[in-house]
Length: 382
Ligand code: SF4
Image (cartoon, rainbow, N blue to C red; front, side, top):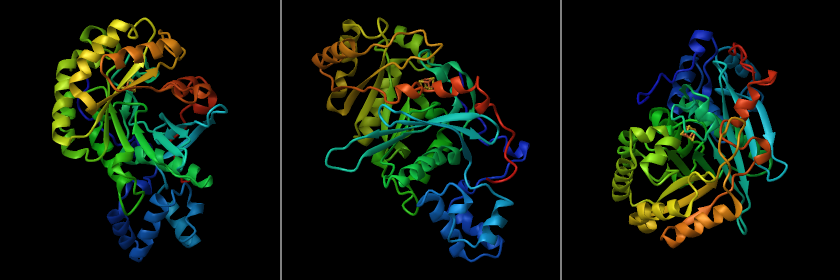
């Protein structure tokens, strides 16, 4: 079991890649400007380009003199990640990107677009918090790929800023961020917390805390501390089974943090925050989608009353996946049984099925192709 926070610093120092400006907050940028004999407003301009205009290249920093841009490029990259593959669904507009990191590893990020009748479209970014994942859930492509390292805060926030720039082209913006991509956020809490701070910074990207959701399989010691720092950010718990025997098969961390301990921690969180919690449940045919299990789930979650919401998610198949997707009438029947048992339930179908929707699937498929082969670390800024 991995509970420690592994060294989040990428191997760039070893490999000689340049640090990125997105790693620096406004105070650090001002310090950097002072060191280089530049007026403080240059730091503010840089900060605004990074976090308000979501600039992705030095060419976009048009409020800086060309010579200054060229000078900065000698010592810094602008962003900590670069795009390797960008896919767009022809069915539902979902977009999925494979990002390359300075040490040659890769992570995935997804943009989910949804109509919002009478309002601006909802654009949700699903970010990764680790390269691979130590949780090793048996139904997850990322879990089967093993764990490499934690992401830095900038590597997480830069995933959002990439799509912020994409959406600007369409006159739209990022409305929601969910920490539900590759990785278990509560095994990388320092960087995750810092990245949330970067996204919520009112002087920068200025996203509302209520528009961010952190999802966890339930790392109980970290869960017990969440009420101290999560603020308005939403909590989602990946449950996937109503009893320990089944859950330990699907979510191996359950052997360390059984359902009883997990739900005790959620009760404590609710008592401290009075904020509603959602429970995520991936539907696997004939594994966890029977009426008996729906009733058992009802008994388990009913004590949360209106403070809990159950999201049922038909499983997204991938090459090595050994399950069958439960969907359509099967998913509806499970949902109905859970409702009869007293739960608030929504069936949520993933978007982007034509672009490797399963978490970790694009990365897995890409690794057998030339385009995603690890490149040498960057030595110059592009
Ligand atoms: S489902 Fe989430 S927590 Fe489980 S292995 Fe996959 S990425 Fe990790």
